[in-house]
Length: 65
Image (cartoon, rainbow, N blue to C red):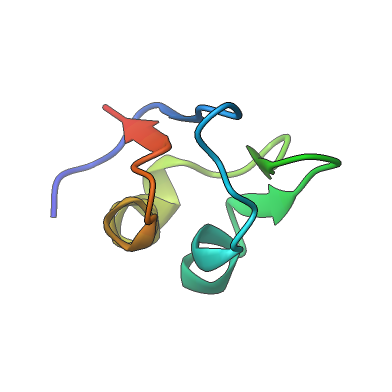
């Protein structure tokens, strides 16, 4: 898969289902109201997991480049 250099979550779209956490816990965690990208997460090293998480997200809240 392609190397991911940037990832974000649209908190307004997130329904807190934790699919992203299940798919890539090294990058995603649950915040107060929505999933968030962990501070200091190694985005490039977890590119495959990020893509998997984005594909698993039922609301397409995860965006990556």
